Length: 63
Image 1 (tube, rainbow, N blue to C red):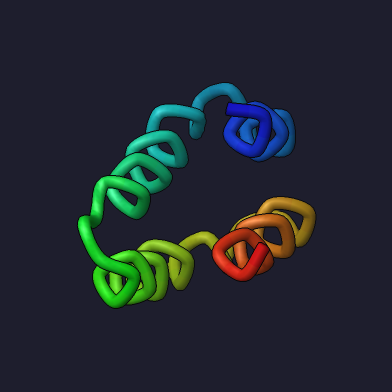
Image 2: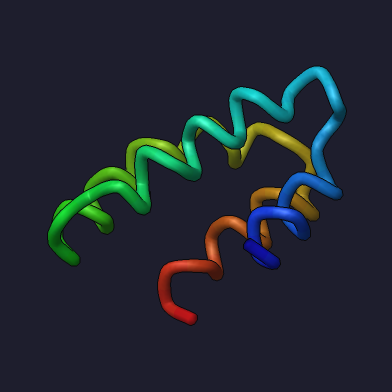
């Protein structure tokens, strides 16, 4: 919950739903491999957003 709130704090209000949907699809995966695969496909578009968001997002799965 805290990670999601921190992530959304760096996103424009208009983009919040898109980021929330991406976050939920990643963590709904049943296996670690599924999480990593979904993360890779969802984070790539986020890298085009402000650095504070993509930097936070890229670090998340590892810890």
